Amino acid sequence: MAATPAESDNTTQQTLCEVIYRLARAAEYREEDTYSHLHRMSHGVAELARAMGMEPDFVERLSCAAPFHDIGKVGIPDRILLKPTKLVDWEWEVMKQHTTLGKRILEGSDLPVLRMGETIAYTHHERWDGMGYPRGLQGSEIPVEGQIVSLVDVFDNLSSRRPYRDACSLDEAFEAIREGSGSQFSTEMVEVFLGIRDRIIQIKEQFEECGESIFLQMVGRLHIVSHPTILESEPEFDDQETKRISPA
Ligand SMILES: [Fe+2]
Ligand SMILES: [Fe+2]
Image 1: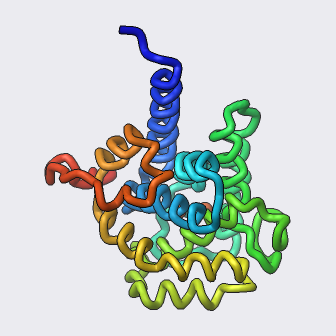
Image 2: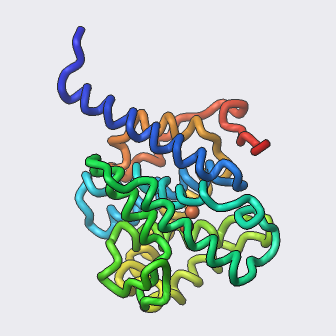
């Protein structure tokens, strides 16, 4: 039996999201913990956007496009990206270029989700006070999708272990976000984020060390990002299937 137009649209959307995820995964393959980070980003930005009252279409697109935020890292040399110690000034300048590289990789598309991905890649390191990069945008000059990804990314990075440091506790990570209110992030967005603390912790716990199969099953049920009950209805996964693949 032929697919209905709605089924066909849904399949196209699922295909697109899987391709996006796999490209983003390829870009971050050299770094540790990127699979679970991408999953948490996808869910975390959806939660925050929904709590901010964004339309379901926006929430779904954002959830799908967020894994692209660091795609520009594909152009950053290993000796900088994987350096186990603090970057010196010139290395930091190279690292910052992942924003403009990401924009260049994604620009020129007619697909709304890729256009949003381009915006996110370009603006996810801007700061509310204008001290971010690459352009030093200030306040509402920063597209809201870039602001949302920035906040959720900072929280997830702080609360995750890195080769050069241990993870902050969740309390410390929430406190760091609170301290960034009005400087790194908008006051309103921080307030909303702190108001969904329990949901963010739930995402953190659920996607702590998950593998790719969880995300791929998730994009097969994309509609769930518009419904806050997703986490209660996640199925059980086979341990072998969800084991993280170590970079070679
Ligand atoms: Fe980044
Ligand atoms: Fe990230």
